[in-house]
Image 1 (tube, rainbow, N blue to C red):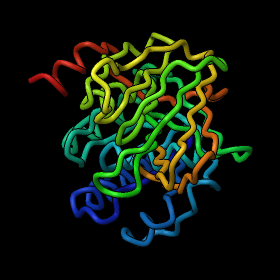
Image 2 (cartoon, rainbow, N blue to C red):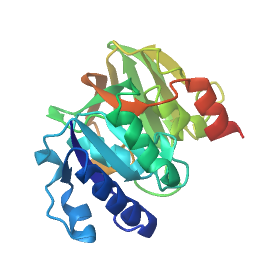
Image 3 (cartoon, rainbow, N blue to C red):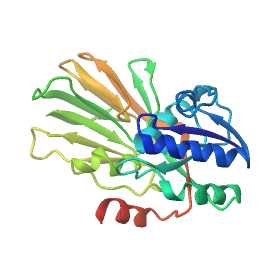
Image 4 (spheres, rainbow, N blue to C red):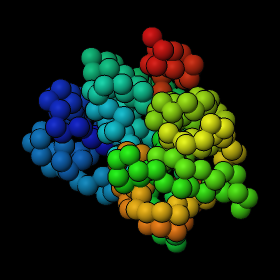
Length: 266
């Protein structure tokens, strides 16, 4: 088994743990260290896109995982050195015990749908959590038209629109009133941000749907998983479908509702 190691390099605890992970795995398996992580721990590294590994170990928070998944498509084992770490699997102190379980094949792979994003005819990154289209200026609403399978479903003025996967339904979408979707449900949720319309509500649609959003006034910002931004001009067309690839996470406890209770309710 071959492991890749990625750390949140601007966080001391993450770098220290990444060094411990590399030292431990070096005795048990093949390892490749991500380029910036390697510079911090004194090892030669490779860019994420060039890593040919079976599992990537991330040491950081959810943002570290999301950035990693933009560049590689292998199962991710998340070690939490962030704030919430809802996508991570173990805390820092449980890093080595967790790696031992992986080496014993004592784990499951949790598969999650992703969003395929097109800006006009240009394909952008696939998203694990959500895509957000929002005003580029504070306190300036935009007029959005939302189509589902070429049928206009909503015509709304709002600060923005979120299109989220079940994974992303526990993130930004949840904060604007979206329902939490069980990840076994193949669906997306479309949620308005601060809509100027009393009847505006989040909409859950099948993942096989094609969602299209236009903005009649610009500019707006298109934000993918909170990591990547593009400017959207007037009458640009942003479309969303289910990606053909899945996000995959290494899990020891596969119960989604226990994870929600422990991570978001307590």
